[in-house]
Picture (cartoon, rainbow, N blue to C red):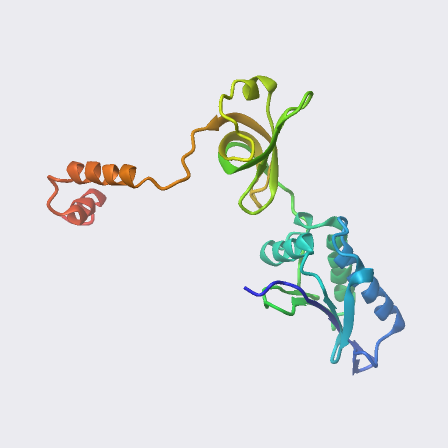
Length: 258
């Protein structure tokens, strides 16, 4: 898969019966658009420094191509969430504010359209125009119990003990716990894979977890055990030995055959 590295920001419109482009653009629109692109790239976390981003101007509509964005993880994550979920409160608030401004501007100028697309992998393609309806939706969080797997990167603490669990996607989940629970662990968990039974609040829309609390470390055997698998096969074969046709028997249970 090609790494995401370049973004093309474009605005199109008709001003005095002429298409907006590098040679025909109101100064106010040019200034606002450059400011919006800079703010969108920077976000709240500032994982992109616009001063270090190379920008070129494309022909056609007024378009700015920003490169050198491979390490901008929150930027790409926000774009993918906006493209797939369409909710503004799931992305960085500064980027959400830019999209809201574009949407308001497009509703006031029916010919105006904003586009954001990646130039390397063609995975991101967003449009904001008079017909779009990006909005903030109420988040719903529910209390759940679940099992999470990862590598324990840190654990302990004097006043607020916790476990730092690195997940498969590289994110770290900080799980609250108690000194008593950690003290009763006989196994050294640090820098080892672990399966944690936790309680937490889960976002019904995104699946994000907050306020996780450790309930227990669970037994975990990540390696494939051939002997155990063969034993399961033998048990299953014995259990079905008196059924001449398993498929026909299953259909009968489902009521598929008379």
